[in-house]
Each structure stands twice: as structure tokens, then as C-alpha cells.
Length: 100
Image (cartoon, rainbow, N blue to C red; front, side, top):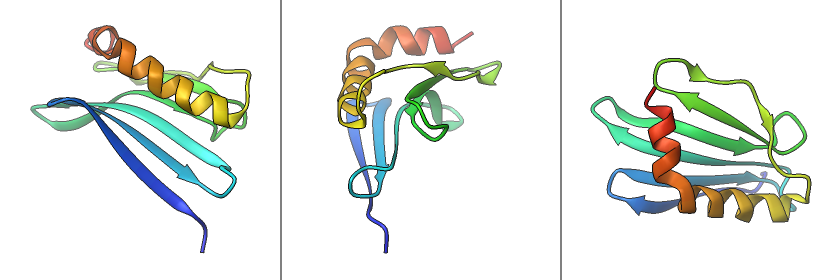
């Protein structure tokens, strides 16, 4: 059975960062910024490696998921904490940009 885990990090009552990984060592991961609104939990930003290289998807309330953008040139073990730290430090501005 493959190794999988998900960890949720509460940033505020209405905002959480969800980290998911598969494999040991990590083969696939995602770091997702979620916000709670009247429609439930909504995805705002995703960092992952499902396309191969580390990349990021912006989301907008009106346009949904945007095209991938390169995120990190380092190892997976460097990219994951970088994504988590970025979301924790900048979540307010990221959510503001999502609200378009």
C-alpha cells in the first residue's frame, strides 16, 4: 500500500493550508491554500509537482484555475516548506487577488 498523508495547518478561522504527499520518498505532493466562504471551502492557490517540475496554479473566484507557473528549482524537500511558508506569510494578499 502506498504511503499517503494529509496535514492541515489553520492560518485563521476561515483559512487553511493543506499539505498532501504520496510516496516515501515523496513522489507527489500538493500544498493548497483554502478559504471558507458561503459556498464552503474554496481553493485559492495550489503548489504541486503533478506535471513534473514544481509549479503553482493561481485561482480566481471568477475564472477558476489558471495556467501553471514555475515555482521552485530546488528539490521536493525544499519546495514543500517554501510553498507552505509563502502561503502562511502572504495568505491575505493571495486571497485578495483571488477575489476578482
